[in-house]
Length: 360
Image 1 (cartoon, rainbow, N blue to C red):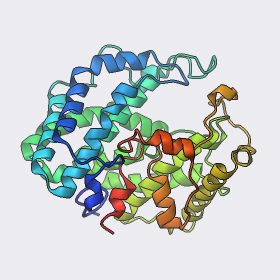
Image 2 (image 1 turned 90 degrees about the vertical axis):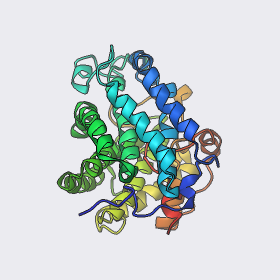
Image 3 (image 1 turned 135 degrees about the horizontal axis):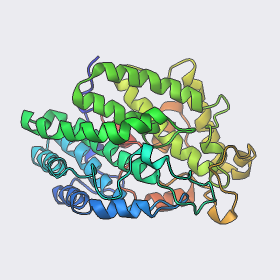
Image 4 (image 1 turned 30 degrees about the vertical axis):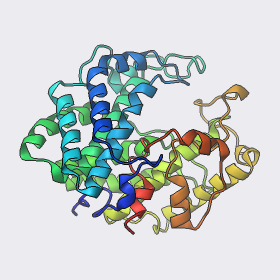
C-alpha cells in the first residue's frame, strides 16, 4: 500500500484552488492564520477552558484552520512551491515554539475526564473535555495540511515537524481515536487524522489498521435505517448533528477509495451510507418525520430555543457527494445555505468534495 501523492488523491484538479466562497489561494492569508495560531495559543486555550457543554468557545481558534487547510490543497493543485513553503515554514514555527504542547490550562483527555462530565448538570455545565477535543481537531487539520504538502518537504522540514506532530498525535489525537464516540463526529472520530499521520510518517501498517477500524466504526454507528447512533437522537439538534456526522463519514469514504478500500460498494456498509443520505433528504423535507425517532443517551437538549432543524453549516461536502455517489439531489436547506456562506473550507471533514471531483 502507498498513499496517494496528495493524501486524498494522486492528482488534484482546478477546483482545489478556489475555496467555498469563490476566493483563490492566498499566501498572506495562510501566513496570517499560522501566525495567529502561534501568537494566540495561550488565549485560545484559555477560551476553551471557559466553554460550557452546549457552547464551546472556539470560533476565533478554529477560524485559523480553514485558510491553512484550503491553501495547502491549493498549493498542491497548482504546484505553487512558494505557497507550500509559506505553510511549511509556519508549521515549523509552531513546532519550534512547542505551541499546543504545554500552555497553561492545556488539558489532556485523561485529565479532562477526571472532571464532572459534560451535560451532567445541564447544557451550561462546564466542559473541560472541549479543550483536548478542539486541540486534537487543530492537529487533525494541520496533519492533513502537512500530508497534502509532504512532497514539498525537505529532510530538514521533516526533522523539525515530525517530532512536534508526534507529540500532538500521541497526546491529543490518539486518545480521541482510542476513546471513540457514541456517534460520528469530526474526521470520523479522528480517523482521518490518524490516516494523515500514517501518510506523513509513512507508516502503512497504521494506515491499513485505520482503514479497517474505520469501516467497523461506521458499521457500528450507522444503523440499517440510516439513522446515526447518538447524532440523530440528540433532541432538537438531532438532524443538525446527523448531517454533522454524515458529512465526514462520506468524505472519509472518498479518501478510503483512493487508498484502495471502497466503502461505497461494500455490501454491508454501502447500503447504510445510502440509507443515511435518504434520511437526510427526509429531514430536509419533513423535520418532524425525522425527529419521530426520538432521543437517546444524555447528550441532547429538548429546549425549543436550542433547535437546529437544518443541514449543519459545516457540512460542505454532503450535497455534492450525495449527488455524485448516490444520485440523490438533496433539496435546499435554506438556513444551511445562509450560514455555510461564511465557511471557506471544511474543518470537520478535511477536504473539499468539489476539489476531489474536479479532476475526475
